[in-house]
Amino acid sequence: MKGWEALNDTLQFPLPLLAYGKNANERLEASITYATIATGMHRVKILSPSQVAEELSGVELPKPNREITAEEIKIMALGCAFCGVCAADSTSGARWRFVRFKAVEEFLQSWKSKGRSIPWTRVPKAMVFEARDGNAKTYQRFSALCAVNAAIGSKPFAIVTANRVRAGMGGYASGKVLFAKDGTVTHAGAVTLSERTDGWTPPTRSQARTLLDNLVRSGLAHRFNEYHGGLTYYSKDLSAEKIAETLLLRANRKASNPKLQKLSEAIRQAKQDGVLLSGELLPQSPHNTDSPHNREVATQSPPGSHPIATQSPHNAASYASLNASSNASLNAGASALSEKMEEKHFNAHDDWTPEQRAEAFRQLRDAVNGKP
Image (tube, rainbow, N blue to C red; front, side, top):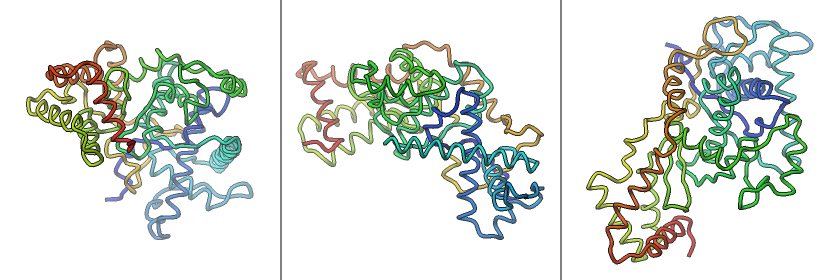
């Protein structure tokens, strides 16, 4: 059985592509093209000539000409096979994909020359096509997930702020590029936004929180709050309980503070009672787990003449759950789990005032972050 028979369900591309072009459709087409060709370039580097020939066996490649080489056509075909995207079936189609790819490369170089970071993000392929073919609401959800996943990167989980998500939805790696600590747009941020050609404006803090809540409920992201008003951690696949456990393990390795020890024991006892952040209130993510981009396995393009991939039945089934969850109550999810944790485990200590509980959490955070 050929390796390409395993479907790759994600696409990976630079986050700044959310600032590319004059509209959402243009930037999404560019993101798909860049993801497939960048993947093809990587495949050419890691595969032997015989492996390349095997992956492309049975594939009818367009003929090269003065405007596109045989090597470029091979790169495009390898990337499309791995990503499950239909390759261009004509020389002119292949050439235009490389024209778009090179235009994006120039855009990224210009972005970098301004001192801006270029993190990559990885999202479900079906979500990319839904955003391309959908409306403003589906695009917002897509761009919010792009921002969260770029912030997490390859880490098991990371602190993700609302400002970082708001800026990330526009392609920026840090909230400081646009916002002050209170969430207002700075003068430098206003200048940055005025340079855009698409007229994009960042979402409000309230809109960002709503989008994040929906991502958590749909299982596209997982979240853990230290305490009300404290730092918020997000993960692609670790449950809130697992994030809390990992934080405690790190704290135990880095500190011997009595309050932290008492905190750790309280959470362990609560876990034995079966109520600590079980994660059962949140559905398991249909995406971002055991990511295909962490496996070097090529995939077959879906049949059809459409120049861009269509959704597979698997993706359509997964998205039924996602779409159904978009109207869920904003008072559910990981925030409720965090409230249970605080009520169950810290109110149980009669000798702790609210200030002491908050201080214990802060000390846990500082221990995790290596602060004295």
